[in-house]
Amino acid sequence: MQMLMSSLEQSTRLNLKLSQTALLAYHPPKGHFRLVYHGLILPNLPAPLHFFNFINLLGQPKIPLFHNPSIIKDKASNTASVMMAVSPHQVGHLKSYRLNQQCQIHPYHYQFDQIDQFKGNFPHFEIQRQDRELELNLKIQTTENITHFVPLKWNLFEHWSILCHCQGHLKYQNQHYEISGMGSFDYARAANIPYLPLAFYTHQLINLNENTQVILSQVRNQWNQIIYSRFYLRGINGENLFIDKKVYFHVHRVYPKITTPNHRQMYLPREFSWYVEENGQPIFEIKAQSRGDYKFGVGAGFAGSFRYHARLYDQDFEGESAYCEYIDIRPLNWQEKNQTQILADEFLQAQPCLLKK
Image (tube, rainbow, N blue to C red; front, side, top):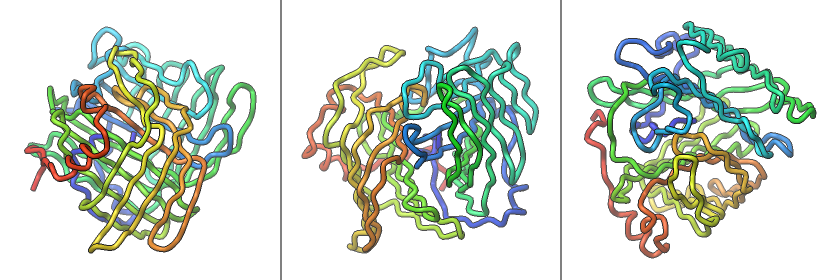
C-alpha cells in the first residue's frame, strides 16, 4: 500500500542518487520498529488484469484505520499478511501467516510458507507467488527518483517511495500474461502506536504515460477534518512536483453500503474527481469512474482500479486502469454528507501533533 501512513508524512521532493539508497532505512522488524511494510503498485496492466498490488505487513497495526482483526492469527505481533490482487474476481488474494511458524524473515529475503516470497536489495527486487489461483514472478528495478516522507516525532515512523520499473509474468486461472510497466515501490517502518485519530484515507496512483506518474492522497480525522490532501508528480527522468494546498477530492456517486469482514459499514466511491491548483492556476484535474473491482485487504479497507479522463496543465490524458486505495471508517453520517457540506469542510485543516516540524 503506498501506505497510508503517508498521511503522517510531510513530503519533500528529493532526487537521491542511486548510490544513496544505502542510506535508506530498509530492514525486517527490529528494536522498537515492530511493524514493517513493503508495497508495490502497478497500474495500467492489460485487460482483464488492469492493476496489480503487493502489500506485505510484518506485524499488524493497532491504529483502527489499518487494523484488520479478520486476518490475525494467535496475536497481532505474530501475524504477517500478504495481499496480491488484480482486477478479476479472486478468493485468495489476501493471505496471513504465523511469523514464528510459517515465515522465514531475513534482511533481504522474506519467505511466507511455500506460497509467497519477496527478496532483493537495491536496485533489484523480486516478488513470487505460487498458488492455484494466481502465480507470478515479477522483477523490480528501482530508479533514482525517491520520495522521502519526514518521520513522526520521537522516531515512531518513517516511509519512502521509489519510482520503479517492473517486468515478469503472471498466470491467472491458467491464462498467462506478460507484465511490463512503471510502478511504485514502497517501504515503511513503525512503532506500534496504540492510537491515532485517523478515519479516512485514499491513495491513488495514475501512470499518465510511460514516463509520468501522478499520486493523489487525502487523509481525514475522526471529526472529518482534513489532515492532508496532496498531489505528487514524478517522472522517470527524475522530475518532481509536490503540492499540498488547494488539492480537492470529491466523491460524486457511491456504491451501495457494504459491511467489511471486520463488520464495519462503508461506502466505496463509484465516481469521483480531483482538482489541483497552484498560484490561482489549474495544474491537474481528473474525473474517475471505478471499475467496481474493489478487493478487501488494505488495512481496514479496499484497493481497486478506475477509468479516468485527466488534464495536466494543457495536456489531456485518458486511461482504463489507474489504482485506488480507499478506507473510510468515519461514522456513516460523515460518509453520507452531500457535496455542499464536504466543500465547507475543505477549510477545516488539522495537523497531527506527531508530525516533525
